[in-house]
Length: 257
Ligand code: SAH
Image 1 (cartoon, rainbow, N blue to C red):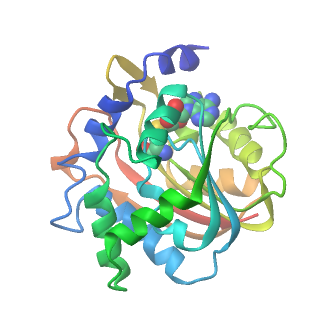
Image 2: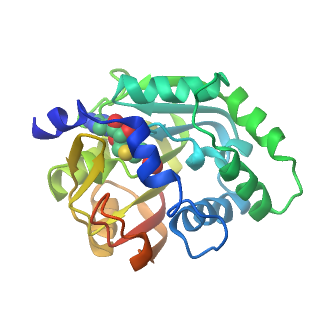
């Protein structure tokens, strides 16, 4: 209940400013956190192993950076979020409306690290074309979309959502199992998330987070029925500890249902 109440005050623009503008979104060095996240995703999708008809992104929030490498490998990307304000923010970007957040530096950076010489506008167009559904979701329900996804997703992505909506580790495991229901057996799951974080700010909202260690992520994936393929982590440098949260680091997990 406290979490739900906190999210009523979530301000998408403040969240974007805190996490997706400098100093965290600084593309001048790979040592900053946003380039690290984009590289994890770019390298994982570069193998060509993760592909199919549908990829679902759970708790997309107001952001699309997490879909930039994914969108080359799926016919359809389904974005989801609990909050209407976030779904609206995403819709503004998908339709190219004025006032949408400027993701172009992210798109340019991903094209650069993917190294195919693709003009960034082509990737932007492809993601907009493939992002056809932006759905409401609640990961605390065994059926997070309210009904099964048919056919189930070929891949699942979730960034900074599950630990940020779970009061404790047991709830995190349950949420992971719930979102796993959206994925076909054998499907790939990619998770990015916070390590050692107890809160983050988004305008007037102060959201509690369950602090996780790498070992918690490993155990949760196993308990929720996933086989771990890869786990990497990043330590938040002092210069990026800006007070918008108390995060210690970031994990990236690649697992298979
Ligand atoms: N994926 C984005 C946003 C993460 S912030 C990023 O990488 O930055 C956490 C998100 O979880 C918010 O967008 C919030 O609206 C969403 N959320 C809150 N409660 C939720 C719930 N019960 N189920 C699913 N998502 C929820």
